[in-house]
Length: 165
Ligand SMILES: [Zn+2]
Image (cartoon, rainbow, N blue to C red; front, top):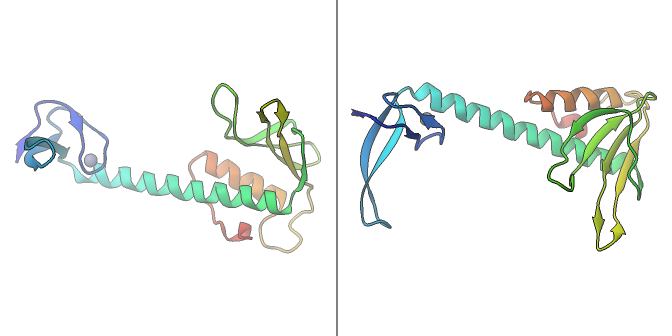
């Protein structure tokens, strides 16, 4: 195997490979009709840890979507944008701040809110979940929702079972 003289992008994990930290090999590129150089990390542990992080990230996304679905299912929907005073998770993006934000107020009421406009119409939505504790013991009370969303923000996986509809 030949060490890479130049930095590149790992063909296994897609992350950066600094000079001298990878191996290069020539492979035939049918589209380009020529041999091209491919680089990969010499330390395959790097590729594996990148993949592990990707798996954790996608598990967090599954958790996020399960909880959002749960709040929409059991929350009281109103056609306006109402917020609590503490942000739990904020997925708004772009100049127009599209997307959901979850907030909580001092009564531990959870609000899932999206502010949106289309063609001059206010299409804002809020789903409100009042705090009933965790009566059924499933681990899906408002405190559970808050701590699960905080975990997801920190890249820690959560069990989606309590939030399965
Ligand atoms: Zn790699």
